[in-house]
Amino acid sequence: MKLGLINSAWAQAGKGTAFGIQQTKAIGFDTIDIFADPLDTGAKERKLIRTECARADLPIVSVACVAVGLVDFNPSVQRFHLGRCCAYLDFCYELGARNLLLVLGEYIWERQVITPAEQWKTGVEHLKTLGNYAANLGLDIALELEPFKLSLLSDVPNMVRFIDDVNHPAVRANIDISHLQLAGARPEELRALKGKAVHVHISDCDGKVHGDLPPGRGVVDFVPYLKEIAALDIGGAISIELEYSPEPEKIVEWVTEAYRATADLMQEAGIARE
Image (cartoon, rainbow, N blue to C red; front, side, top):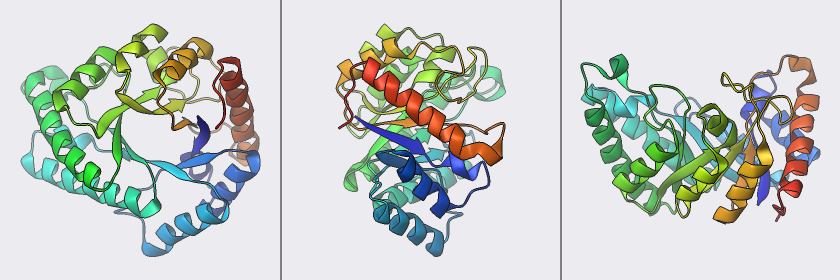
């Protein structure tokens, strides 16, 4: 598998696109994921992303999209987010990415008023539509497990059930290791995602709240998860996801620490860099 980085690590520290791409390559990463909204990204920035990644010989694997409105109870909001997700898929195609990393929404009003089954059905129907759009572009959609109480995709069983209900070859799972830790998922639960996963995120946490720390700064025991991921034989990339550095002026050191720790963990788990 490749070792990648989500470029939001740099943006959160106030660093520009070109700087982030150049530093990602200089540190040693194989690939990069892009966090940018196509509705807020102009032609110059889009070209900058393409040209800088090409110059650095840094393939783009994934583009991240948060689209909680896909399961909103207002049809007009759903239509907007459906169109926005299609714009994201077009953006993926433009950048030469392999998948759209999609964060689905949460149950509204604590599962009262609007039934959970209705929101689930809405999400499934929209992902069938988006699956068709993605497949036409030769892309996958990678759904992210969000370890929060009201998230639709809050644990591995829910992820499996949702993917089975959508039943589309272009709609699969992203595996986020710190999210699995926070959801209380055992490494062996990942076996249920055989043939259903297409992308991986890695970061650490304190075991209590979402953190996205460099591996080694939290409590996650990574190797058992990584060994299960290796057995899934999904190929692709393991992408490091980092939240705000406590010292933005030392962001290069922060990202470098995460890179070295993850490279060592991959080696320990027997995952070859290809």
